[in-house]
Length: 159
Image (cartoon, rainbow, N blue to C red; front, side, top):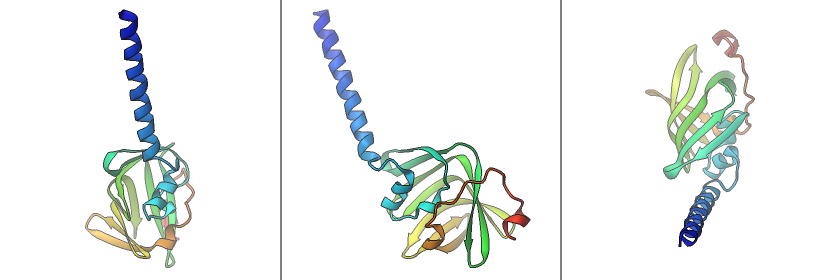
């Protein structure tokens, strides 16, 4: 009787592990956070190179891990914008948007702003920074930017 109970418990645990693994495979079929961005009609360049891992949870909750804090630059219309990423970046990803973003700051004209949301509107990305919204062409984020370890001074970032 005890042997049968042990076999039953082992079978149930194996089925639960298999179901959990199958659910993870369905959630992350591509294996790359950059591909996940593309699947949601967002450009790959929203995140820098060097993502170590990510988890996509229920409802689109996205947790991205970087090896260390880093900065990356986007140049648009002759202006250089500095994006600083914490070691953990979070948000809720849906088709065409990432909301409730945490872990990303953007320097605009020597002032740092916390990035809250990114929304795609046709060929434009609307980036919400507090009460302000910046509009960038999607093409400004087509390439995945390098992750620079040393944060430049604001003077250098806009040179």
